[in-house]
Length: 229
Image (cartoon, rainbow, N blue to C red):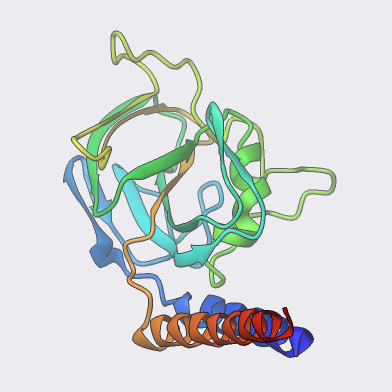
């Protein structure tokens, strides 16, 4: 019986993970300033024809993702088992001019972490979990853990706001003020938030049913022990 119960629990967990994964939607965040919310592009590579811009672009990559392992973000880690949404924000100029743009991004749920390291390794290491399945992230260079160096932010200057910087604010840490100064190749970051997507009703029903199944089994075991005493 124990094997059957754990089999049901594990099977239910798999069902919940599948049921909770929902198509990404740009409606879960908004922008003010020099920025634009877009749908997930076909690629986020340097000077790709689908993404060069004269402002910051942002799109939702994945929603309702249960993390199957710990993931590293700037200055910390988001634990395995956390349910999250992920977003990418980038400023991909199609030339070598030195330009600066500042945008305020407002998320529906609290920001858990940001991946902005200069080489882009934090982003690359988590794309298998958080990337949009229809978007190309890697240009295929052999030996590169990220598409190219300087993909993230550099020369961070929060105090003067003169170069790359970001500030997370708001009562629930839902506001991101992001400054990007770029020449080439541009800047790309990933933002991870608490999931704004509710669990489907079927998943909640399954959780309740599994809880009742385990509870009934334990109750029977207790009664049998009491009768034998």
